[in-house]
Image (cartoon, rainbow over all chains, first blue to last red; front, side, top):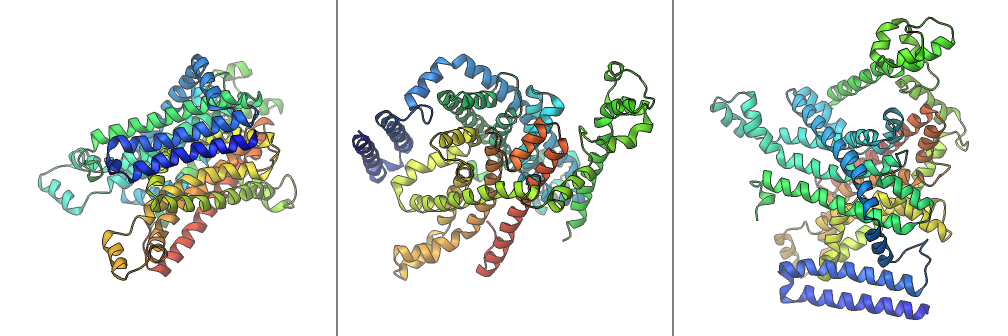
Length: 283
Length: 306
C-alpha cells in the first residue's frame, strides 16, 4: 500500500510537472491564460498528491486531514466561519487598521513640518517596525478586555510604524525643482501639501498600507490566543487545536488566506486608481 | 550621527509620555491599596471610585501620585520597574535558572536561529531554481508572492500539534515555524537579486564566452548580495516573531512567549513587560548584527544597499 501511494503521488507530480514544463516552454507561455494556468496546475498537483498520500497511507486526520475533508468542513461550517470572520477581520483587524493608519498619517503630516522631528522619527519608526510588537497583545487584552477592542488596539499599534515610516519618507520625496515650481506659482504650505507632496507620497503610503494588511490579520488572530469571547478566528484555531479538530483549523486558515489576499488585493486596486501616474502602474 | 539628537528627543518624548501615563492608569489600584493601608482616599468606596476616570481620581487624590509608581502588580509598570525587573532577571539570576530571562531568551533564540538557517538555505536554493527554470518560475513564484499576503502565523499552533502528534517536540517545531516565516521573504528577495544584473552585463559575460555556471558565480550571485541582506533582515525578525508566537498556544514552559503568557495568567505584569522588552532587545540585536555584516560586506564588495 505504501508503495502504491508513493508511486501514485510521484505519477501525479510527474504529470503536473510535465504539463507545466510543456506550457512554460510553449509559444503560448506569455499569454494571460497560461500565466494563470501554470500556478493553478501546480497548486492542484500538490492538493491531489496531499489527498492521495493521506488517503492511501491512512494518515490519521488528527495529524493531517485530506483536502476534501477540509473542504467539506468549510462548506458545513460557513455560519461559524462567517461569525469568526466578522469578529476578527471586520471588527478587530479593520478597525485597528483604520485607526492605526489614520494616526500614523496624522503624525507623519505633523512631523513633516519639522526636519528635526522627521530625522528623529524615521530611524525610530523603522527600528520599531522590526520589533515583535505582537507581544503587546497580553497587555492590551488585560487593559481593554477580551472583546474586539483589545484586538483593534494591538492591530493599530502594529500597523502604525510601517505606515508612519513610509508616509514620512514619501512626504520628503519631492525634488527641490518641484518645490521651487510650486513656490513660483505662489502656493502656500497647504496648497503644496495637497497638490504636490501628498500625491508624490502616495506610492510610499500605499507600500506601507500593503505591508500593514498582513500585519493587521496577524495581530488580530494572535491577540485572540491571549483571551477572546467565544467567537473569532484565533479563538477557533486555538480551541480546535485543543480538540484535535484539525479540519476546522485548516478551514479557518483557508478563511485567513482568502481574507488576506482579498484585503491586499483591495489595497493594490485602490493604489492602481490613486497612483495611476506612477511608472510602476503604467501598463 | 546628525540624527542622534532627534532620535534621542523622540525616545525621550515617548518615555515621558509613558511615565506620565503611569499615574492615571494605576490610580484605581493605588487608591484601593492606600485604603487597605488605612490612608484617607476620596471618594471612599470602590464603587464610587469606579465612576471616576483615572485622571479624575488623580485630581481628587494628588497625594497618592508617588504611590502609583511603587505598585507590586501595576496595570502599567513604570520604566524603572521594568528596568529593575530586567536587571534582576538578566544579571542577578544564574543563566540556568528558570527565572532567568537569559535562559528563556536562549530557548527562543535557538529556535529562531535554527529555523532562520533552514528557511534561508531553502529559500536561496528555491530562488536559484526559479531563476534558472522557467516552469518552476511560472508555477512557484505566484504562490511565493501570494503567500506574503497571507497571515501564515495562524498556522503556528497547528504545526506544533501536528509535529507533536508524530512525536517531534521541543526545539524543532518552533524552528519549523521560524523557517517557514523567513523562507518567503528570502525567496522573493533573492529572485529579484539574481535577476538584477542588466542585459548589458549578461551580454558582456557572453562575449567572454562565460559558461552558465560562471555567470552564476561571478555575476548573478554577487549582484544578489544587497537584496539578500535586505531579505535577511526581514527574515530574522519574522523568524523571531514566529518562535515567540509558536510558544503561545501550546503551553510551552520556556521562552519569551511562555514568559509573556505566564505573566499574563498569573497576574505578574512585570514578567510580561520584561519578556516583551527582552524580545525587543533581541530583535534589535539580531537586525543590528545583520546591518553591520551588510555594511562591512557591501563596503568590501564596493556596492550600495538595495
